[in-house]
Every structure is written in C-alpha cells, then in structure tokens.
Image 1 (cartoon, one colour):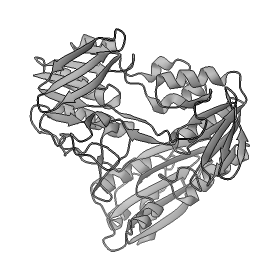
Image 2 (cartoon, helix red, strand yellow):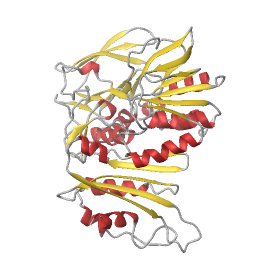
Image 3 (cartoon, helix red, strand yellow):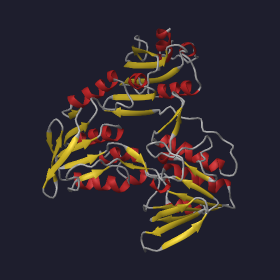
Length: 441
C-alpha cells in the first residue's frame, strides 16, 4: 500500500504515526511546505509571553521521528496538483525548484488552515503580522522586542491570549473586533463581561463593534483606522480567524460553502481512497446534528488518528464533536461546550437556559471559590445542548464531563441525578452540574 500525505501538522502527524505503526509494509510519503511539523499554535501566546522559554517544547514530533518510523519525509515540498482519478501527485521541491510526480494508493489530506486576511488598505506595511505557525511566532517575538504599542485584530482565543501576553510584557495593547464582545463564538454575554472586566482593569483598551478599514504609516505601520476610531500602533497582529487550506481540491471533492472538505464517519471524502482530517475538514457537530467548521487541535488529532485506523477498512467511527474548549484569562478559568444561548437562538431553536452561581466547596472549609455555570437545553426534550463555566478555581473539567453528556444525548433530568463523588476538599454533596440541572427541573 502506497500512502501519500499532504501536510503535517496535528492531523497529519497523528495519521502518519498510526499508519506507520499499523501497516508495516506500507510505503508512506509525506509532503510538507515548512521545515517543521506538529507545532502547537495554541502555545504561541505562552511563547510570546515568556511562559514557555524553549519553543522546542511546543513541538510534539519531528521530521526525524517520522523518518525513524520509516516514513519518506519530504520537508519544504509544495504539492502543486493532485489527479484524484489517476492517483498522481505533482510536487515542487522548494529548495531546488525541481518538479516531481508520484503515485499513491491512498491519499491523506491534512493541509490545515490559514489565517483569514481581508483586503485592508496599506496591509503591506511592515510590522503587520499573522499568527498561526512557528515562523509567525518567531517573527512576532523578534518585532515586539523594541516596540511599545500593539494592536491585536480579532478577539477569538488566539487574539485574547496574545493581548494578555503583550500586556504582561509591558506593552500598551488595543484589542479590535467587529463583534460587540470578545469570544462571542464560545461564551454568552454574562461570561464575556467577566473577561472584559479583567482586561479593562489592567488597562487593556477594548475597541469592539468596529472594523479595521485602513492602516497608516510610511514603511512601517503607525496607526490602525477603524470604523469608529484610530489607534497608534508599532505592531499589528492579525488573527481574525481561519479558513480551510483546500484550494487544491476545489471542484474535486465535496465541500461546505467555506471550502471545508466533507468527510464521512470514517474520515473518507467523496472520492474513494481519499481521506481528510483536521482544519481542512468539516466536523459533525452533535448539538445540532449538522456539519460545521470548527478548527481545533483536539478535533484534528482525533480525526487524524481515525484516518490511520481506517485506511484499510472502515472500522472506527468518528463520534462527532461538541467544540469543547477552554481558556485562562488572568484569574478566570473559563470553558465551554456545545451551543451558547445566543447561537441557539440564532438557529431558531426552542431552548431554555439556567445559570447558577455557587461556591465550589462547603462554606465550612477555610477557603472556597465562586463559580458561575450555565446550561443550555432543548425546551421540549430537555436534551442538553451546551454549557459554560467560569471560576477563579480551575473547574474547567466540569465542561469535559458536560461534553460527554451532550455526546450521549443526555437530558437535564438525567444530569440532575448523575452519581458524582463528594469530598469537602473538592466539592459539595451536590455537584455543581447536579445543582444546575436540579434548578432547571
């Protein structure tokens, strides 16, 4: 079996390592544009902020490891075209310019995603940077050394984490987003209000509900102009969001409107013997039973692992995702899974919610922390659709538990009486999830 892999980040690395271990006689070749693999982009802010001193710790594999598994590892090779019918791949060696062709029996597409880059006047100016891969992180750190004013455009997870990192490094920081609040995809207003208050308390400027229309400067950027104001900037980081990196396969494979490749429950595309995983793909979203684009590392490694397991025969089904995620914003430990109330209402779903505020441990203990928890559920069936949590204590694993509940189609009634342990060092006789579900009843 001859296996070709295009791209080698989270999904690609997982697929390759599993395939190499499972199919000892297979000939596996991976083509990767960059000179590194498996970089954890979720660690960029930690690297920029100095929490992670050695960036090598943000790589969980290497070209040498893949070679040791017998994988033909072709770094700095760009795939130019793929003939899916005749199973031919055309590749350029970026170091020599040589063009070569190869054949395959099975193709794995793990081309990942790329930052969305809207057309903005003067976006060619120096010190306007993207934030996605290892090279970006090195460039951000290099440019940030001798500057003072930073504007971050995009208030998703990466933008929010970068803002905190820059502020902790003594920079003046402005966070710009076209939405009225930060982290809107993941959290409802009562939770984002907490995070925004933490930023404002530390002097971070939130320029929300406004869109960047122009950059000003001579050679280097000096100012960011939005629909509502202007902000001085020595450095601008663009992290608006991501799009699937799938232009090679447009018109060749079934895709969502945003060009995310559609895969079945075994990770196979609309073309036989062609598989895909990670940020290049759509995922099956359990709360709404629809296909959706959710580029998360957790989704990528699960999907990549399944590709490796299913290459010879369809054996292991993808269970779908809830889009479960978490973030730490200063003292606030926050996490979410499934639908927010705002998203559910935008989909015209008939839902109810309950929000509780509790202490995480009995009040007779020497210390305890406040916790806010919200559940979103179907008004008729009582099926759980989503949840969010915030506390100074790290209670984010509660959301992992809730993710399992959603994945297994559990109801509020069932959640109310699930068996959780009680120990005063950790919780109350009724677990926080129990308390919220009982309140909903």
